[in-house]
Length: 359
Image: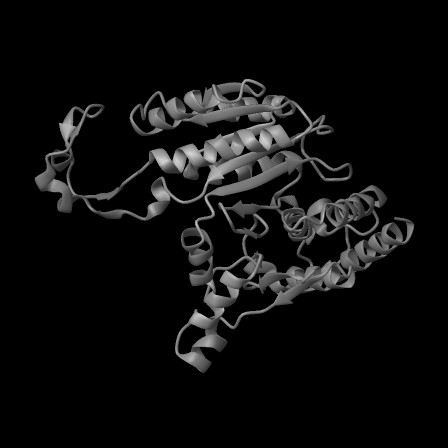
């Protein structure tokens, strides 16, 4: 059996400080995975004249998945290709409390749900411009009771919710709920009271699809009501699916329930491809200080292993994370500890080696 191939992009600012050791850790597990590093960014531009050469794109296409470091710079074209080029429409953001996480909640034990964010449309299509360009369309606002041109100069953004985009991410949510061993429930949330056409379509399609899954409980809430429920009773949630913008915001808020973005993994799934990255950004303010929390990156790596069918390895990796947090001696500053990133990895490596020896 040939090895799996994973394309790796280490990212910008502080991201390589957690990506490189995580890849090294995965390599040490001897899992039959080849990690390839396509040439992109400034080095690629110097060598080929472009930030994202065709050779790098071909390596992504040939790989089984991509492990992607947080970016805000020259590797951004790669991210756009991984999303829209590979049509990774379902951004899965788990929110799972691990004992030892520095959660602000009085009773975080048992919090375990996943937010699925539609990843490709909504306001994130980038359809923006000057409102004067739309003056000839005579767009009438039923809320403002005026034409757009009567409101004065300004800018616009188009929110687009399509049937295909909604159906596939909602159906993905129901399939994920079937796989999870907990409540087997799907919650849909958006602003369907004010955006009755766009978000109303998302809700209506969800109601139709829910009828295909009689074994899965179904509920829906307006997004502001959902936010209150997520904070006051997160234990009641299982799989939550929503349009792109809401999902981007709510998943970051969900990370706050368990202790912050440094703990939040992420995976983006399409019909035949997926990529994995931590939910946090590049953390330029702490780049080079060796203090960034690697937990989100390591847990994203565990999601990668699960996608590749390496379930036991993923279980051991998550177990090693749990052991580090249970011990409490090698946590980074964001979790109330004093350990450096390197010290965290040393502790994680020791826990993982012990688990592999006893497995």
